[in-house]
Image 1 (cartoon, rainbow, N blue to C red):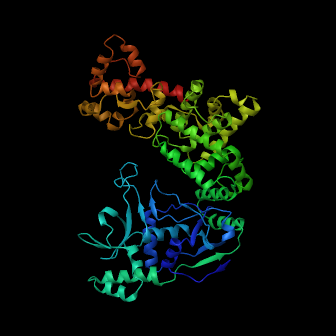
Image 2: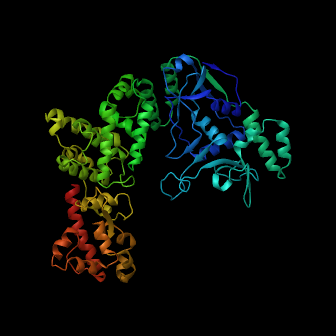
Image 3: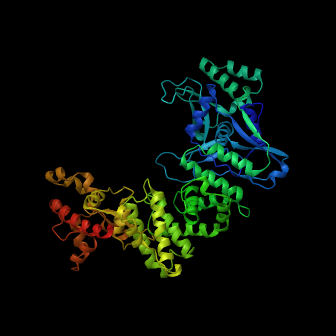
Length: 575
């Protein structure tokens, strides 16, 4: 490994454009936020060092045995985040980036590309309205003052439609220069003529500094590794990156898998699975895929490089299709339970289900076949309970390990055949009962869960288990309707605030059609309409509504009586 003559940022960008800088498959994907890119440009404008880079010189013959990728320059949050694979045929030699990909990609996006991120409070959809394309601009009217992060130069990604991609975009108060346009000014005389036409002295100062930083000063310092063995490159990559935060180990595990899969492209396969599950409505990362493999095939499930060897990687490839299909089957299943990404409060809770389906050899149709109905109901109830109890909190690895022991003891020690083995929810709860004891105080606390809280779905689903959750045919409903809160008596308003009125104490889960029929009727009106044939008592019982005077003036009594009903039912379910 040797230190090379530094190059300018513009030279580095040219090398990226001409495929002289590529990304090895062991590299992670780009993850920097737009604000971090803006911060990087401020740093280089102020002559702050941005650390050295490490490249691996890849000869044409070496390249034939491995996969390489282009840098991404049109980043689109959630929808365009994967690097494009490139054929290296005909490229005699190039440098693969082992350290510095995030910085180089940030520079490339800022100077030659775009960064699209979702607007606040807009839904996830691949449109300009939800995720507008943005280009990087520099405020050339004034510098920043008193910024907490110390920035002086104001870089911002501005919307394409707003700026019309103009080189200089003006607002009522400021002028903004499109950062990538500085690459057009390679000739001193042309640049000087352009700058001298600007009236603002800060504009002239800022653009001269931008040009010095990007075009003139060789600030890209890098080392070059010439050894052609991928193992050597991988070892260097791991050593460089092992000092990061714990979650970064998933990137390292991914890199080991990529380097050692021989028949399939691990990077492509895993990212494709993440995308498929996202299309089902659940946002996950590669971390869950890797954690699932460790859960299935490693004694230690912690993200640790020592838990993932070449042999592990080969097992991963050999079992990939079964693992992939088990994960897909598990997410198909939880979707039929009515979960959304918001209400599935812990993705780690899916891992024991994946383990179960994998060892049962059920990869398809588990969520639809009649023969698995009882098993599905058992898993659904278990999942709601562990989510409500926040079982997969800060010690989720420990809990997962305990649950796995339950599976292995049931299958191996009790000699139960996997094909007739059902999901051991009772055994799981018995095995880790010390973590699961539930008292009235906890139940009273969860009964104050608000309607839009992400845990409300699981609580109400346990209370009302017989609705059509598979077809999303259910609604959360205020028993005493929203509009009547203002009509509570003064004494009740003093005793019961909106927080109580909007909680499980006054909520139910209804069939969608039933809820539309209820509409804005008062509770009394609705009960009369639904029980005119004389089935009032049974109707109220099925809806967990006390059989008392249900007028609003009797709200205090309704609250106390309904609390009794809910406490009894939840005690039985949760314990």
